Image (tube, rainbow, N blue to C red; front, side, top):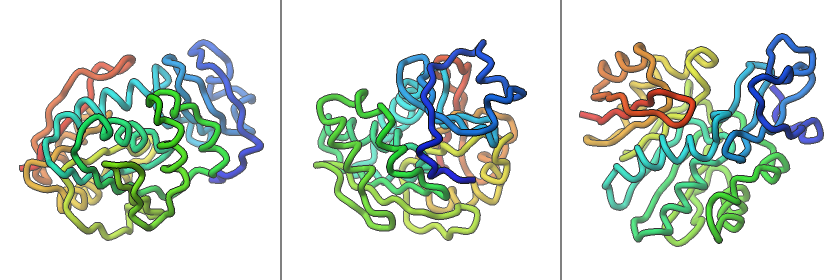
Length: 248
């Protein structure tokens, strides 16, 4: 898929009744687009797979709920090593960088993305406006950070962006916190396979935490099989549950 055709992007406010979100509509076919979700923050819609990068009920509030509150705030490792499956728009990294400035804990954040978004598309996203006075500076630093190199983004936050396919990439290191944010199991089933979670388990420290929006029974069964103890938690707006799992 071609994610670099910035000139073809459009911006719309999300409306669940609108024809533009009907997968049978001819309007969907020509182009992907930036959607304004219910909390005002942006997400990206991909008509090729009829999927959004974030919840249409609020991109920022979904990431805050699942990855920050249930993950970053719960994990007590200091320093904390984070691994993200699916860098996407960089929203989770941006929110984590902003949260890191509220304390003294140093963060080493590694994110894998097979299809990095075009730089010009990243510039269009409004996530920077949800991360306080330092939002623009942090968003620009994250966007401009070199791929394949650990980069200091701010006082407590270091970022390594890796352009790679998790299906074939050999993982190294030890991580205290996993942000599992791939497209859904029905859209990318290979990313939710036992093989992937075995890779993740192998680099997750004992007592480490994995958080994800998916709470499908098969995902829970796989997590148990590879050495995690999963639990269901209340989900963000628009989603009844999410999942957090602790490595044995």
